[in-house]
Amino acid sequence: MGDRVRSRENTEKKEDALSQYAAKSRLTRGRQKREDPCPIRTDFQRDRDRIIHSKAFRRLKHKTQVFIAPLGDHYVTRLTHTLEVAQIARTIARALDLNEDLTEAIALGHDLGHTPFGHMGEEVLNQLYEAGFRHNEQSLRGVDKLEKDGRGLNLTWEVRDGIVNHSKGSAEILGEGWGDANTLEGQICKIADIVAYINHDVEDAIRAGVISHCDLPGEVIATLGHTHSERIDALVCDIIHHSWPIGGNGGSVRPVLGMSAAVLGAANTLRQFLFDRVYNPSLAGVEVARAEEALRLLYAHFLQYEDGLPPELVSLPDDVGRKVVDYIAGMTDQFALRLAEEISR
Image 1 (cartoon, rainbow, N blue to C red):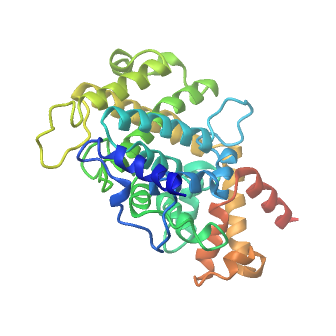
Image 2: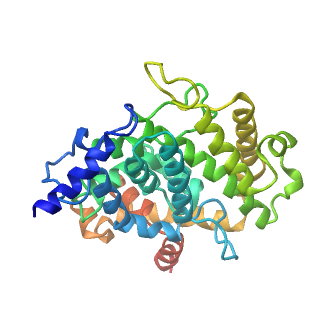
């Protein structure tokens, strides 16, 4: 047993060589419920593993990123998006000598609470449920209260903070109202999320025939590059070289992530282009109307017939609307459509 105990302790000692601003697993603010430490894994490694083995994580493979019911096999799903975010975030964290395990755990868990049918599903649930709905808050609720039949995953404070604070809203990248997670690792995941989606969503939109490569703004091509890999490389390298410590802010009291003015401007231009040409127009069409109708039908049905919800949700000490939202938010696209069709017969 002694060797096994030293395995975790050796990893924790290695973390001491990280940046002084890196989160250290042995200094975690802890879990909501106390647990004995794992003899092999640090607390952040344990959190990562719990997320990967969760039901919500598995369901991400059947949840839409942008396009509903795409016909091709190469469109991004919520799961492949999550894996891309984790890869980008780990690269940045490693380059900045921050905690890669914490970064990975946050990245893998950040979208666990996302609805079926992408952001359209989120908007519909936000309209239907009087208390409102935000997918980042649902992700936290999932790991705290819904997984393991209501017992939750009992994650560390740092991972939970990164998950709930990853969402950007309509704020420009690093702009006013951007907000921050309370660890640099959480802030990395927030910016890695954008790096991932503004690039893979371009590829999906071209694949779907919504835009062509020639439509991309000239500023974006000139600054970030012509290809998917060139743009990601440009963004990641710029973040690394304009953030603490490589960017010259090592002496600042509060180190921050940064980007050069040119690359930041190009990234915001590309993001706005996607809203104007891809995201907002994608909220129309037959498939979208069908998906929205399904969500509204499911909400109305289970609001009336609470006993039709899974037993672990029925037993929660929440109002029925909250339980219905929990059930719908956890559904995959195809399950939601099938269930709505069964109910409507």
